[in-house]
Amino acid sequence: MIYKIRKICCIGAGYVGGPTMAVIADKCPQIDITVVDINKERIEAWNDSDLSKLPIYEPGLDEIIKRCRNRNLEFSTNIKESIAKADMIFISVNTPTKKKGFGAGQAVDLKWVEASARQVGEYARGKTIIVEKSTLPVRTAETIKNILQSVNKNNKSSKYFSVLSNPEFLSEGTAIKDLENPDRVLIGGEDIEAIEALEEIYLNWIDKSKVLRTNLWSSELSKLTANAFLAQRISSINAMSALCEATGANVNEVAEAIGLDKRIGKNFLKAGPGFGGSCFKKDIMNLIYICNLYGLHEVSNYWQKVVDINNWQQHRISSKIIRSLFGTVNEKKLGIYGFSFKANTNDTRESPAIQICTDLLEEGANLHIYDPKVTSIQIQNELKIKHSENLDYCGKWTYEKNYIDAAKDADAIVIITEWDEFKRFNWHEISNIMRSPSWIFDTRCILDPKDLEKLSTNLWQLGTSNKD
Ligand code: NAD
Ligand code: UGA
Image 1 (cartoon, rainbow, N blue to C red):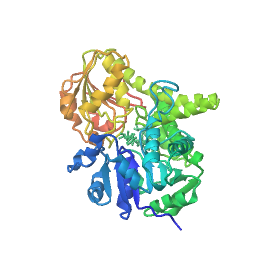
Image 2 (tube, protein in one colour):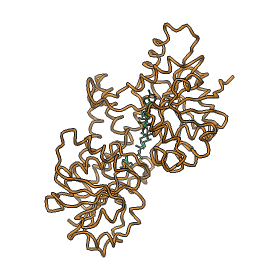
Image 3 (cartoon, rainbow, N blue to C red):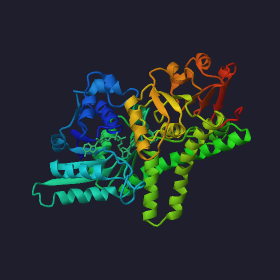
Image 4 (tube, rainbow, N blue to C red):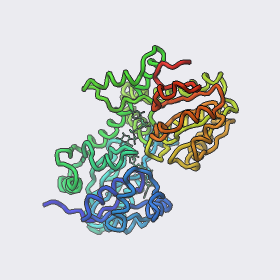
């Protein structure tokens, strides 16, 4: 008989916890779901009646929240009560790279996972299935089990825990689509009853053939491996983008040509300013740390190169901009189009824009930043972190609410995020209001050079043979 799940608690109301639970609530009206967080403002934003104020921008999310909130989906700071009532608890907390101490810069800081496990150990009642949704170092389930056991050593009440790994593969910007129609659902674990209970939830909208069961450690490691492979493809095509520029080839044509080979495939071959986002770098650094821990230094060196190329690509773009503007951007106005790490998200974590802007600010540039979804405070926080890392820059930046103000009298526009609306901008008008000789640096190759042919502006597109 399948163990029926009636109440779910998700710890962590972030980019994964929020959308994932929203989709489960939408597809499973028979299950009550509470998403809890220690961040009061975030929970308030999830509960805001004005859906444009949700803490996360994700296409399609607002409609689901509208349907499910106050029906079978709730956002709360009452962690104790929500855990106590739940049959199944998803841990979906942040797992950033450690900033100091042993393993700083590589290992994952597990303090939020440990805190969650302790909360579960303390407040859960009866049989509870714990699902690792966060991306975790391989063998973390063992740590969680140990914590649960030790918290309960002196506790006489009958508690029984089962730990499963169920990594999330959604991409930001397409999270709802990915959750509604995933390529696969991976469940790692030993307890068949618990695995079937979790599988049963997904079977409400996903075909059984897409559910893959593995052991715990394969599941945990598959998530790190998937992200490392995806990031590796981006670094591979970005490495080729530099060679294309040097040789007169066009990286988009090369990507298309190789992508038609079914063994290579066409996805994830878009050259750009390097991968950003909260996970690729963090997960590869973690993989590097784990490899070193097991003495596999050649393996860790291999993955380190993927990150090195990514950093190099960002500096390469900054350097290209400076060289094109007669070797100096000091006190020059530059319009920056896009600050999020990719289109259709307001997430700025590890965005390539941070490094490129910092490089230009260090050179004294006067940046005017426009992004349709990112707020001024987010930009301030991201650039402040860099600033505090002793990168003492002398330039300044201004937040612009519209793209025309960002372009007026600018020497250059730098497109860093591939927002669709940028393609529809009036580039003729932009070109007319810029200071001559002006430049457009299109790091995402979103513009059609033919449309800009008649303009006086110089166009540089990443990975193509440009007029210099
Ligand atoms: P996030 O920072 O947006 O959200 C995590 C939330 O957990 C925060 O709001 C934080 O306040 C909360 N939290 C931390 N400790 C808590 C505790 N003890 N009790 C209650 N709440 C607590 O992070 P995210 O982007 O949602 O990522 C979460 C995990 O999912 C990470 O491991 C990440 O690697 C993984 N992941 C992320 C994505 C993505 O697209 N962002 C995709 C797949 C997997
Ligand atoms: C990525 C993975 O795609 C998800 O499967 C995974 O669940 C998630 O990380 C995670 O673990 O957090 P995400 O970071 O949201 O998702 O977005 P991606 O679409 O993978 O893009 C990551 C970065 O790579 C972006 O900066 C994007 O612009 C860049 N990218 C992506 C390229 O430069 N070229 C490409 O061809 C694809």
